[in-house]
Structures are given as structure tokens and as C-alpha cells.
Length: 475
Image 1 (cartoon, rainbow, N blue to C red):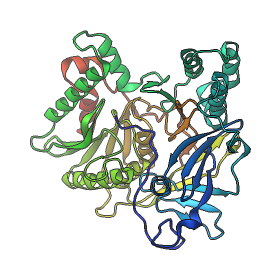
Image 2: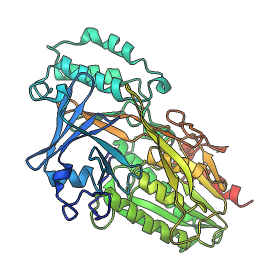
Image 3: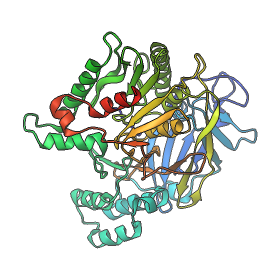
Image 4: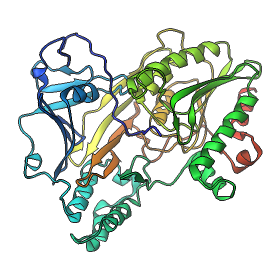
């Protein structure tokens, strides 16, 4: 399954001013040194010998990753530009449209110095403290999620000791995370994951359906089977010959290879577009998020061309599991007639709020914007980059949301490595609209509330929410 918590990158380098991170433009020594990603707790050490990533909090530091200089440049600093004073490095990525800024450091912080860093020999108490402090320093939504993190520590502290086993440490950490309803909070240990957020939206209905049957014993297999059934039901509802399906290069655990579906209803009057993810991993470089955006942009252009004569459109986001914000931007732009500011974001850490970076929604470059009525189907499963797309579309007057409140988990997942190699992802970014409203934890509410998926839908091969949307647009 493609993770929603990747770091986005590209391999394209352009020799333009200001200085770019490419050997063809100038010697790469200008970029050697230490670069801190402010608000993220990461330090990148870039040099010819061995490039390293350190992850730190107010009480400790770990060496999270070691790689070649070339790998670090292409993965973390694509199309980077250096400020004229040489103190700020800015990374520009299509998949991650908000620019990433890094500050030059003269030396590593004390806790990251050799002999001071935590490593695999850290005691269970040290590992737990590093975990707790990481969440304490970088998690942005304690208040919104109703979490008293200091109280959580007090509850766990009596059970902490240097003699505790690995399973006891795991129990302490999972117990600490149990109150998080954030889809981006996930503990990864070995080949296993612990995700405390309960299933929402269509996934909750699918879970109920799974528990109500006995034919299929594996939950993922059941979900994949039912989603394939729903897709087939939708295709049978569409106009004959109008259905197009674009598959990805890999089989997702839930969605299979299916990435984008479109077609028409009512003799071509109503268009239908369903992106299962905000990514399209086809063709060359299937792991390159910037390529995902380019792939999706081409598919969107084809879909919009096929639906150019429709009177209205349905965009089905009920099953969308997120992906790249750059795809959200590319898709939303096809419906925007005038360039306008629609969304901003900033980091929120123990040190305070970072600078707000704003993003303008462009107009489509190849075709006129689709300004006829658009109904977007939403569920509690609509999450992350899917919700970023909703925020962008919310600014457009022709758009109506129908279904359920979205998940309320928009921040990128910030992944941190613990001294024993386990990883914890968390939310440290606040997305806001132009009225400075954040939808983290509360989600984006529908204009027309309705149940996104029902058990009857699963049992009787129907899609009542889609049928309701078609009926609404046919009036």
C-alpha cells in the first residue's frame, strides 16, 4: 500500500537564478553544511563523505538516516535555491506546492553531538522519554483533540523502568497514543503498525459489514472485494461506453490498482469523476511524487475533455485516502476561472506558530475552467490531501458538498524515528482558509448531509448516495 506519509521529491534541475542545487549550475560545495527544517525538528548534514539526517527534540537527538550526497539532494532538496546571503535553502517541489525552507546552522545542537545522541543502546525509559518529548514538542493539536499530554505521562510513568521488556515498552507507547483520533498519528514497529484513530466514514461501514459476515476472514480482502463491487455498481449505472478507468502501477491494499474512474450519467448530462487517491503512480518513476502530479494532470485533462459537454459534474471523494497536495492543486485548478488565494499553512510546535505560507489556486492552462454546478461527495474517510482539495474547492461558488463531514486530518504526516528504530508519525502543520479557519479535528461539513455508504448498499449492490446526487442534479 502506498503510504500517505512519504516525503515528496523530484529529479528535475533547472539552471536559473537564484543559485540552484545542481552541479551543472555551480559547485555543490555552496550547499554543503547543516540545514535545519524549522518547525519540523530535522537537521540535514550535506557533504561529500556521508550525508545524514538528525532528528531532535528539546531533550534528545537521534541519527535517523545516512545516505549519499546525491540521494539527499534529489530526495530532500530538489530544485533548491540558495538565498544570496547563503543562510536559507528553499526546496521547490511540484507534489508539495508549499515551499520548504531550511536554515543554515554553524554546528549541531548539543544533543546531536557525537557521544550525546541516543542510539539503539538507549534504555526503555530513554526511548519512552524521547517518544513523549517528540510528541510534546511537535504535535500541533492537543487542544483540538482533547489530549492532556502531561497527564498521559503521569499515568504511564509508574510503569516505566529500565528493566521493562520490549513488549512492555510497546504497551506503554500504545497506551499513551490511545486517545489520539488523528489519522496521521501512527506507530510503526517492525512490520506492524498501531493507528489509534477509529475508522470513519465508509471504512466504518465496511468494518461493520465485515463483522456481520463470515465468508471472508481477512478484513483487507473483504474491503477490497466490496470496493471493487461498489466500483462495478457505479460503472453499470453510467452511460454505455462512457466509462474510463486508469490503474496505477501497484496494487493498493484497499483499492487494488484502480486510481481514477470517470464517465457520464443521464445521456451525457452529468459527469462523474472518482479519484481514489491524490496520486497516480503510472509509467516511469512510479515512486516519484512529482511524476504522480504530472500523470494525474494528463488524466484530468483527458477526463475534462471527455466531460466538456456535461451540464453538471459529480466528483466522488468518499473513498479518497489522500496523497500529494500538488495533485489536489492540479485537480482544483480545472474548476477555477480566476487565480485566487485559497489556502495557507504554518507549523505549530512548542516554540510557537511558524510563518504562514499561502498558496494561490491557478486557472487551467489548457482549457477553460469548468464553472457549471459541481457536487462533491464526501465521507469521514476523505482525508489528508483529499481534504486539502475540499478546502480549495470550498472557495468556488459552483461547488456543493454532499455526504458526511470529512476526516479532519489535513497536516502532512511528520515521521520521527525513535532510538530503537521504531517510527512515530504526527501532525505539526495547520492548514487554514483565507478566513484563518482550520478544519483539523472538526473536518469540512457538507452542504447537503447524507450517509455516504450504508450496509444496504453493500448487501444489495447499490450506491444510494450517488443515486441521490444524480437525482439532485437532475432536477
